[in-house]
Length: 578
Image (cartoon, helix red, strand yellow):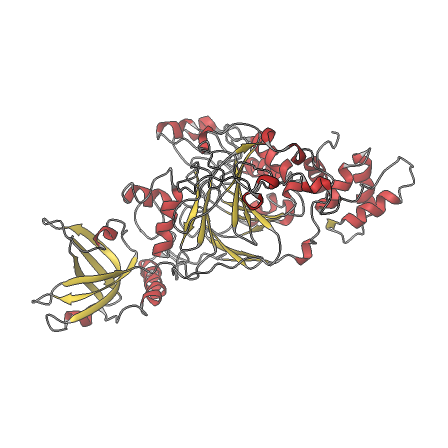
């Protein structure tokens, strides 16, 4: 098969056991005979080489004795040349306004507006199409983010971009060597829970200890058994896990809190300004209350309510150089509805100069469709063997540039246990998904890239949050609202015993002990993004069109989106490849 695209070159190199720098792939692709150039580069590579460098490829081309007329591409134009000044690969505003029409250069802008993904463009004043109404081979959106609301978004098809942005292939894809990148992954676990009652006790005791530490500086906490012995009318404060929530006949809220010494009832009057916060409470989350004991001492009248929450003063870390990360999830390879063409367009785009700064790809679960996940799934499978599904996914992964660092965590469709935290894939599946030597970790995990921490969580608990909370607090159309609730609770799956399975482990790995800079989820197949107390939240849609099961539950997925984050600024650009 002729090597007509960079993606095929990367796949051919992977088949031979090599990765390659992007500039090396570009050099091979630009030769009159790419197949000959690739074979020559592999032939001349030192035995210990795993990643072909541009220098190695260039040397093999220049020393080729076949006289086939191989050439080295011309140097890219200077930064102030006409080619660079006529357009910008990332338009200044969401509507794709060229640089010379940007607000800094006197261009007119529309009023700033709020709204969810698909809302009005922040600077152009142009209404953007909603995610499920966008068509074309590729569209882009550059967002402007408010602190707590969803960012604004505009979209633009590839065909509508300024002419100077199209066909631009003469600049090298990357100047940074793979060895110099900074990435660490934490959160992988070795499951040691036995399923005994004592393991369940341990996980909730650990949850209480971790989250109560976040609250002890705000209240003068007393254990529940101590409060029981206090005089009626005394001031008291308690930190506990929510064991029960119910409303009284008068419309007040009775919340029972449990700590390691017992439980104590707390009454929140309906006229309190924080009474509505009770409607967003979930069982088993940790809260703190302050108030006054009743005349009989048997109940605490609550005067203030506190959640672990993200500090409003949180200042996120950023990278010290221009570098970007692509955040995706829910590939669902093996499904009849898997969008292979969209994936190929995404992979091909990653080889372009426009994507030169994308050095990281984070995949938040559901690499494959799996088997037996929902009723009637076998009728919608294109690949019926689970190992064959992972083989196919690995082949698609080879289309991604070989020098991109990849981190993957499992999801509920993957071949790992359903109970969270989900351990990383076993050695057999790791061996299948060996392309790019991807880093594979548990669900959830924290990935720190270039100093920026990204909490990756597949997102099964979002179903529970959306089902339990009122519509104004969480819906499938705005998954980032549900994500904000998890940040407020500092736990990715607070409620036990519902739709989210929680594994009995000696400690609770689902607590957010550290504040992330970015919170990345998937699972619900919807595109959503926003900021909560300066934490950037991204739910990254999916690569599977609507299945019959999704039709039955009235879920219209957002498909083929790839959120791209500039790690130096935390600016977010949304691209679609459908």
